[in-house]
Length: 423
Image (cartoon, rainbow, N blue to C red; front, side, top):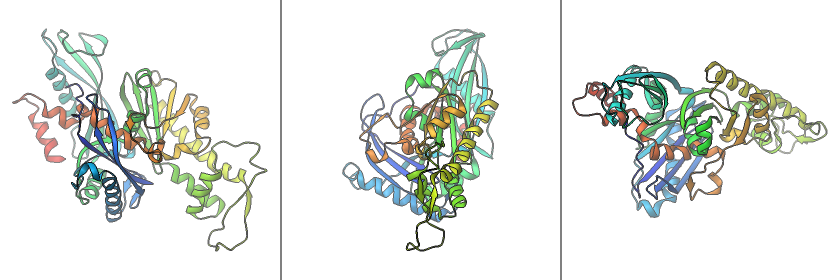
């Protein structure tokens, strides 16, 4: 596999993050030969037609995508000079992504290991997961062995008889992807790449040591909580739950008999993920469902609100912990957790995560972009920012990119044709 090649200086890149609560678009320009970029335009809008990471209304989703992209184009108008956006990198919601661990073995027969040997190993692994039911999104090499010797990070230029490559592949549900592609293409945009949401969030927020030593990114969205495990500088596992911040809001609305809009406001203003002895004495005004704004105040102890929020957030982290335990990766995960996503901004979430997961926890925000407005520089926009880093620095993990660089006449041409025909 070819090492990551940065996009040339001056290249324009656009990221489209389709979430259950919001749709966001960043337009960036590559500013140096290391793949760094500046943000030229941003747009974001409340989602419609999307529920728990799944398109539920094509027309509504298309309308919001158009509005969001148009806002980003307007902000970047001086650079784009009237040319509309055509290609976007899009997030794959974690609920539609599946991790696959695979090992590809290749006979080297004593010659020097080349890029093409590694591409052949990648392609061989890809052939094992081809299906009409899902699309291959990522092919990530996570470790090499030569003649049984473990721990090889860079095999190119080495010699041996046999090479094994441990590979993490991520697939996406074909039906969900086709619906998402339909909404995007109806907005006159082409998908140039896909990246799983939690992977993108990690690329935006993690420092190099966290990626190398072992870290779990938990991306807490409105309808989906997804997570990605990094180790040795690579993503080695990912999974998701169909639960997020909107479920907390729904619990509040039911528990306090108020509207969803008021429940969201109460969560933001007074919500906390961990109870304290002060909650019982503090009163909050909860608008009654169906009553007009002139109705008298309805004061309840803040402890009622916190008592609704804490069990749901605790349940989310317990479910994440169970999935991490079931993954069999507990030995390499490390003690570091980084929280991203809009729902991670609720007061007390970091402390509750540390308690339930028994790990060191911090909030993550995009750290690799310049020119990012303050309004979109927080955890809620980590995935959007990471999509740009992915296409700029990790394009060699795209299955179609691997196939396109195989030598002419390769036996893997059939797979390349399949990928071309199906996406």
